Length: 127
Image (cartoon, rainbow, N blue to C red; front, side, top):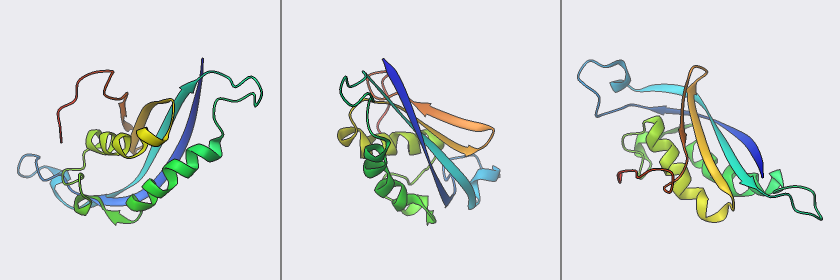
């Protein structure tokens, strides 16, 4: 079993409307986000790879283009765009088109990250 990782970057603004009054994240602010897409699978005996990185980009880039230089709160499904919600939103957008998707990690900063392992890893509430 192999694990491939491809990172995408996007710039976006957001606020978190559900945090307590006075919380710094309630204010509109921006991040240089990165998202790592993790695919697991077996080595193709002929091609000698799990999946072409170009195929990962073909599925993911249009989705990340929707987020880049945007206000996340105005995108359907991202009204409260925590890192957890962004991971889940991304999963729902790309999982049906990306075979072997194993995990998605979203970083708002170099010190803060959230990883989602899909619906079979643990139950997630609807957002």
